[in-house]
Image (tube, protein in one colour):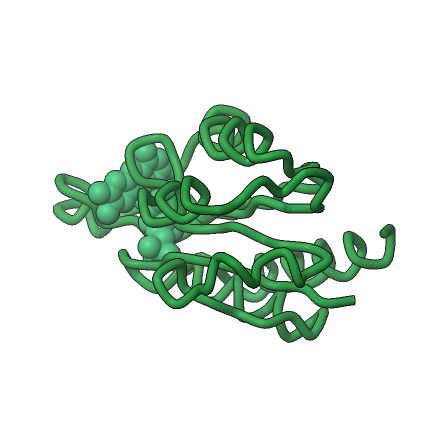
Length: 151
Ligand SMILES: Cc1cc2nc3c(=O)[nH]c(=O)nc-3n(C[C@H](O)[C@H](O)[C@H](O)COP(=O)(O)O)c2cc1C
């Protein structure tokens, strides 16, 4: 099974750690949105899309990529993120909507906390310090393994 994980990670490299752990676990290829040949995306059986959460949604680089994709009718996808705090049901909604619009079938979602020093949070030493930690990485690995096994 060919799996591609596309991610953006700008703030502290939090999402990169999660993407790498998932990729190692299920032998997936990793790519940044800008590196991807959109015409070859259909060659993969499963695609993962992830980033940090910036202003209640995934990074705009992920949205830009999804916008450029051809119709992906029936192609399986999963969504992941790291976030300072707050609810994934709200944070994942915009990307989920765009992926569904492209015809993807969403087969799973994963999120964990990520060290956040945005704006005033820097003054208090940040929040979710130390995340993703070992437990988060293990959960990401377990998620990816179970997801692929269930397909
Ligand atoms: C500009 C900016 C906006 C952010 N907005 C949110 C937000 O709305 N909700 C949240 O939980 N975290 C927010 N965060 C925290 C990041 O989602 C969190 O630190 C994430 O782990 C960053 O991932 P990265 O290191 O892979 O870029 C924000 C961080 C930055 C820099």
